[in-house]
Amino acid sequence: MSQDVMEKPRPWVNAALAIVPVVIVLLLGQWATFPNIEGWYASLIKPDFNPPNWIFGPVWTCLYALMAYASWRIWMLPADLQGRSSALVLFYTQLAFNAAWSWAFFGLNNPMLGLIDVIPQWILILATIRGFHRLDTSAAYNLVPLALWVAFAIALNFEIWRLNG
Image (cartoon, rainbow, N blue to C red; front, side, top):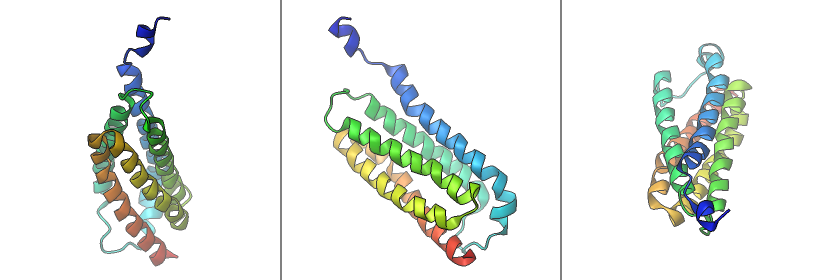
């Protein structure tokens, strides 16, 4: 293969690498969450600052869209750009923690396990923002709402664990 063929941008492949994992995590989260909302989750004592259930779907849909867009921006950068690979590893690691949280908290009905997952998840999100910021500030800024929401989720998860422990 000629050098020109190998260096052509692959927008559809990059889009798939950005979007497909995020959609998989979204679907895995729904699979663990939805069956437990009306039964187990409804039976928990929740803090006063707990949002209504209907707010979580739209918020997470927006956050997942922002995550996919942010990672796509990084995927579109040159493959040999220093820091790109490590930033993407951080991104997909925090995404794996995101999926695991739904299964820990809802799937296993275990707020403590959810809390054990969500704290490192938040740290990984912050590290991903830092890694993305070195490469593309727009990609980094698209993850700031995620960091803020997950910080809120830590407080909510902690209070649910404390109130129901």
